Amino acid sequence: MSRRVSVRSSEMTEDKQQDAIAVTMEALELYDIEKNVAAHVKKVFDRKYGPTWHCVVGYQFGR
View (cartoon, rainbow, N blue to C red):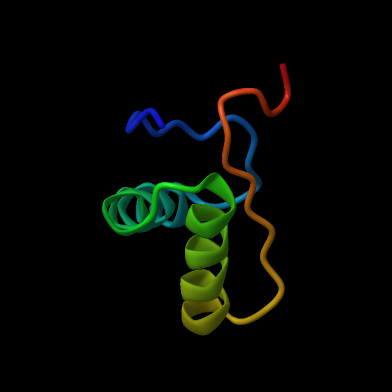
């Protein structure tokens, strides 16, 4: 799995986008499966900013 992180589409503030990138980089160190990376990011954001967040991880998403 690639370790490159980019935000494709978002309605979040720039601060939250930067936080999402940091949390995703952390998740990529912990997990090798895309759905586990997404679940980690969602869990952290739900806890930090309140529910309900959606996170999609994967190179092929949206192509």
